Image (cartoon, rainbow, N blue to C red; front, side, top):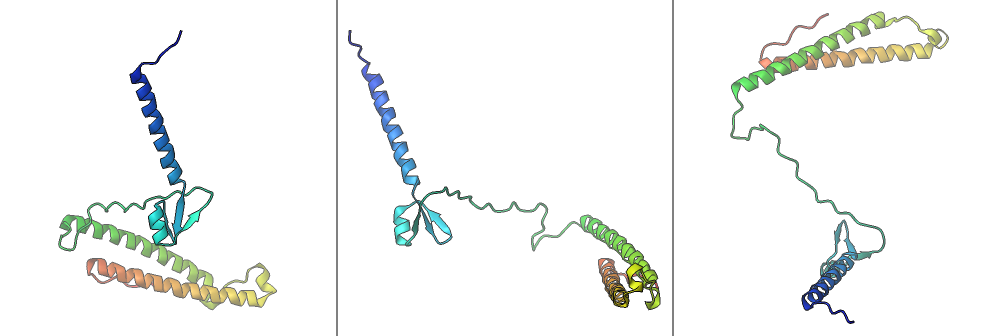
Length: 171
């Protein structure tokens, strides 16, 4: 007994075969990747026009760069920031600056105490090696200078945030 498939089933199988064959050819065509400097292409005509080199072996993954999302509540050149928002930002900035000023002034007091008018106490090996002592004294003096500059800069910034004069130095 011979079993015959209906004609519609044969047509659908034949169509499926052609679809699979087309996909296989497309996948095979994508296997050829060309490098054109820092760019890659799988278009043969473009690769020939740019004298690109065929890459053999290995896989190439190309990730499209995405633009960063725009920041929220950014004022454009023509837009004004709400006065209350600006006051809140200024107040926060001033509080941060005042906190940093207190930290810098406390650090300055510690440095000055350790410096002891240029004659800090000698530590362990510094009793036998005077150069180590002199290096530490020079480093302390430099740290004091840098910290004074930091304090002056913070005071200038505080003066700019409100337009009021900065606090007088604590000496």
